Amino acid sequence: MRIGTTTAAIAAVLTVTVVGCSSGKDSDSKADATKSTVTEAPGAAGDSGAAKNAGVPPEPTGGERDAVLQAVQDVHSNLIHDEDKAIDAARNQCAALDGGATDPDHSAAQRFSYDGVTLTDDDGSHINIGLRRTLCPEA
Image (cartoon, rainbow, N blue to C red; front, side):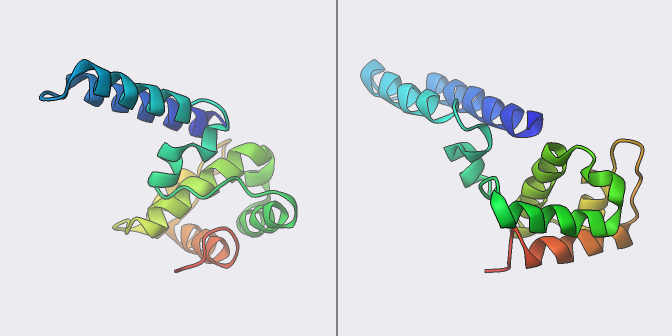
């Protein structure tokens, strides 16, 4: 949950900074742009406009959440000890998969290596297969 909140906050700050630094626009249009950005970032942290633009899918619920957690657990049972952390990692990995990551298996291995668990690229491949079957199917 912290990753999604942090990502949304950073995106909001960067957008406000870019809008504040732009030239050639009057102050009213800057204020309107800043206002719309700020109202977008708070709230449902992982489901903000910035997260959607980054390719992060909405947080899964119900059966979809269970399926994602099962796919991650199939690779290593300790990865779902903190379910929110596993879901955040899965959502961010979807963005990497859909964003054309250079080495998505390595990316998944790094993203899911936490809480004393170190994964291999082969483990990352299995996570990606599970995510493609659940949270982020190929378009």
